[in-house]
Length: 216
Image (cartoon, rainbow, N blue to C red; front, side):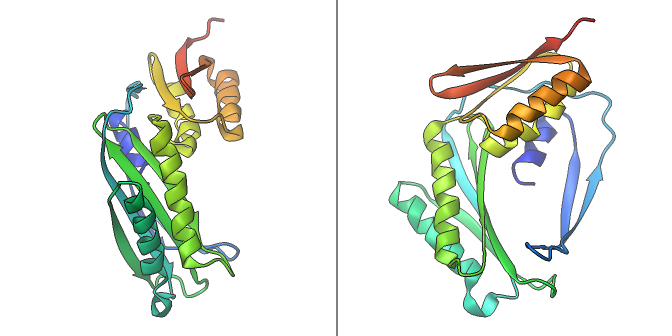
């Protein structure tokens, strides 16, 4: 929600997501409410410059684990990792009690840059996985994005495909890797929505371009 929704808003798609209950593997039981405003047209997204890193934010959550300070430990480890590499992070702590069916934790981090590029990374808690490991894992993933300087992260890259496919006109963005999900979404969009994508590697990044409607 912290990466996808703001990016879609730039494309003219306004929606709000409220988390009613946090859910965790294997029981799940999470619950969200999504409100989407009608949208008559989707604006193409042209984002080819990383710009300058402005801020790093995050949310560290634990459900029924407050006594072990899980959310705080995740955030502290991530903060220390990023600080050692010259970055400060503003991480919100949430000690949740919304889902008594499943204890769990997660940490999401994201950046905002001067060009409005948003890059995110996350990690989830598991049995026998320390809070410190979760914090370091999320921070390592985010640093990989920051160092590569794409304009969308590896997960947002595939989630955007249906929206840019439906937008009128050319859209372009940069990602640091071609995931299986990204390749599959491009293939499906071309088959179902009669559009054409072009993918090329430039300076270590993959440039994703939705070029045009296909003829015929």
